[in-house]
Length: 263
Figure 1 (cartoon, rainbow, N blue to C red):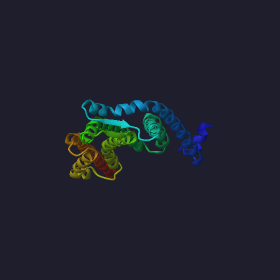
Figure 2: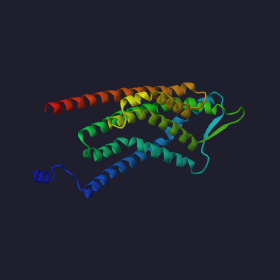
Figure 3: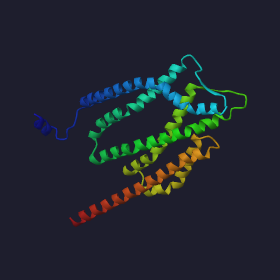
Figure 4: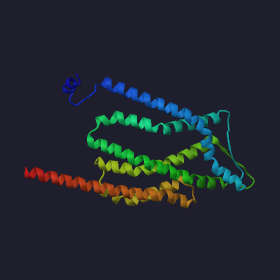
């Protein structure tokens, strides 16, 4: 029966109803993993918020009056729920990324599969490295901003605003580190050439510098360079990889044309 079914359907194509059932099953698995991780993340929300507020403890030790506060009745629960959602998304990412790949990859050709797996294998560690960089510069930025509090005043920071600021900074730097991988992916797709990427290095340096200045406060030159320099290095690495890909592609095309001419 299996051999007969394979004979009748040599490309192993699935009907629309089968695709919908497969999507529903994988979506359910991803959803259950997310809910379980979010429940666990709810209990980790308070320790994570305390960890994020550690720069404030250092400021208090230096004599600067600053406090992290809950400014309304529902804010404590709201902050913990938002942290739980974020942790659920992060902790369950191996499950839902795998389910997404398992649904999409069978429809791709061999070379497309290599591109997808290569993209993920490169993007994930770069995103983690970017988030780690954002986490490293976060205390410096908080200390600088809160340091503008006038003498005799106490800085009362809302827990929700503090969490949003910290998350956006860390996430923005993480995404910025992934951009060179997207550039390489566009090159592999034939959208942009390696030489075009390399010729745009001045704009890339300018964009990295502006981004570093945007996510860090004025006067924090060191933090700006901590963000901008790795982005520039990754951009040149992406340009080098794209040029190598173009050379291999041109060499393969030349060999193919020579083979056809001989035939």
